[in-house]
Picture 1 (spheres, rainbow, N blue to C red):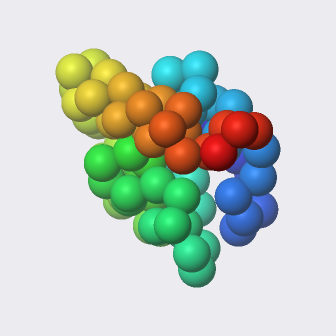
Picture 2 (cartoon, rainbow, N blue to C red):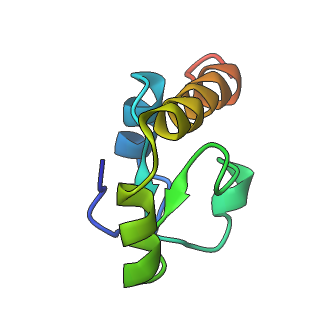
Length: 80
């Protein structure tokens, strides 16, 4: 999922991870307070990074998606 490069931790990023999607995001200051880059979210800092994300195995994408979902549900819901 590409969030449009807004440079913020908008609701779509959390909605997507809560649904179990692997998210490809732009990098922005403070992102690591919401998700661990490389573990819970993928970063599109360069064209090469985007291509690398597209080349990840299904298992790797699943692992990142599951970690992102777990983090979102643990730390970023309305009751947390």
